[in-house]
Image (cartoon, rainbow, N blue to C red; front, top):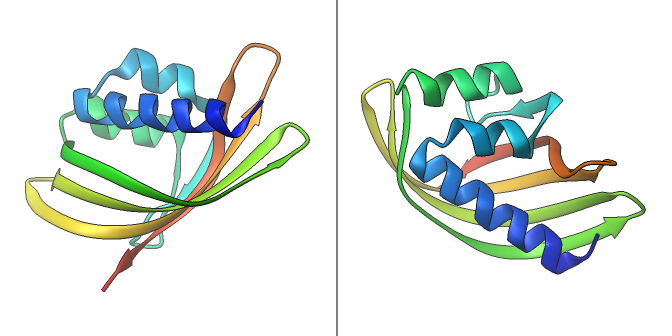
Length: 121
């Protein structure tokens, strides 16, 4: 696993979010994912995918600025600023967020195992 692998995975994740591509989200998110969303709620893979399947979460635009990528054995830790425009439960949002995401290389793929996001003022 290299830093470029993680950048490629991040880009694939952004496109899947924009397209609500459930198959790609299933591939990129680990079954045991735990993620703290900006509201403070902990969500699982099942919850995250359900929000895209139902149409509750819609991403119209997403762009990122990577701050750091650290590779530690089979885990990558990435911090980044993400500009996100879309809607959640029919409430429009346009915010900058700071994320930390943890990617793990398994025998079959590189997948997100955890992370957290906060809104930047």
